[in-house]
Amino acid sequence: MQGSRQIRRPGELSYPPTVSFHRRPQGRGRSAILVAASALLATACVDAGLPPDCDEAAVTREATVTVNAMSPGTLEVCRAQEVTLVVDPDTDGVFHIHGYDNAVAATTIEAGVELRLEFVAGRSGQFPIELHPADDPTVDIGILTVHEP
Ligand SMILES: [Cu+2]
Image 1 (cartoon, protein in one colour):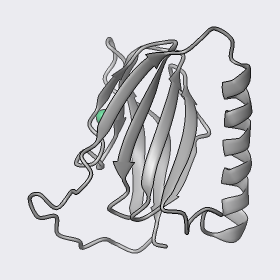
Image 2 (cartoon, rainbow, N blue to C red):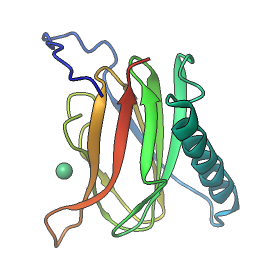
Image 3 (cartoon, protein in one colour):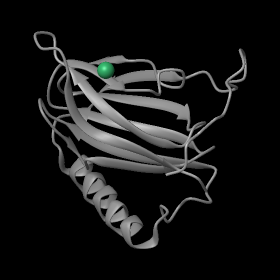
């Protein structure tokens, strides 16, 4: 992973991060299938080096979050992609992509309430994904990897 020496100027972030919540219906069948599909993609990109959809302008990644883990554990995208990250929490807390705060604000999650984060992956590198439970400082639950396309 090459180091990023990009300088961020004020106002450079052209897509303000957006956040939306909606209560999902009971039953986890659909999201289980999506998570399985994401896991397959993650496996594929280990072989290829880059995510298979690296040339797409916009991509969606979905992850389930429990009290101490995220599944899949690694989310892979390519720099400059518009990312929709769908978080399916089984626990309460604050979801935080460490070092990516300019693009994605730390956001409260609630068990059973799907969180949809939209941001532009403006910086390449690897960024720890953390869960901050109300009663505990920090749990590392995964990694966001932003590849150079
Ligand atoms: Cu954090």
